[in-house]
Image (tube, rainbow, N blue to C red; front, top):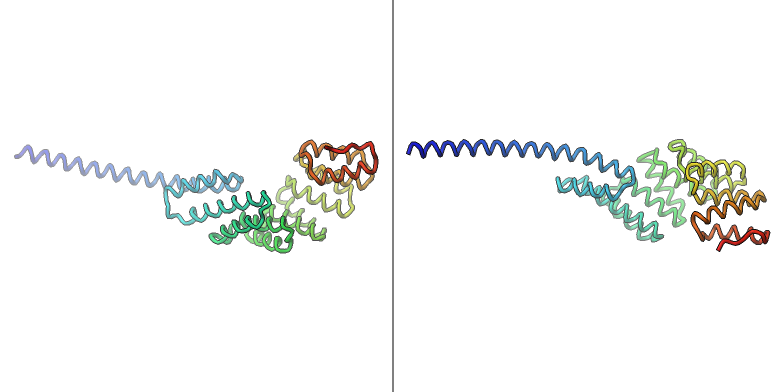
Length: 269
């Protein structure tokens, strides 16, 4: 009986030790999960800022696996999914469907910057410039340094023929990011419409230094050269643009005008 009692005591001690060991592992595991979660949130946000949205979604899933009830991650995932869906639909020119996706995302988080900007950009593409400006302003209220919204607002003002105000917005965007090709091209285009061709050339050239294959900047230079009667230069810019992005209607139209002016300029087929 005595030996049996000793064995029971040993087993009991082993159980206690095992429970302590198990509880220690659980505490360490929770700490590791907590550290992983903290770093995971930072990785996720960095990926979003780098426009690597699919990878960011993967991290939302990883974080939700650790904590399925984490509302910020759940809402963030829905926001990002709807933003990506909206962007895809916008690129396919399905603007009404894109707006539905943006609105669905905003129901989860009405201050989601990218979704607000995306909605404004969609309205701009639909030529609803005043409404687009309202949404760009909403984005800028959240982040006054959001250069995409400043550029988008500049584009709307340009299309509304408010050229001086548009130039201010492009300048604001360029103060944030001097390498912003879209704003450099937008400023050049604005100046070209205002018949300030030599100055417009400077901004198109700056854009092309950053991106030598920026078709719209090449086209802008061709427009300026055409207006100044520099037809050979215009033809050269258009040929370069067509090689980069063939058969664009606006390029073919200007080349057609050159062809009518002088038969030596060959149409691009």
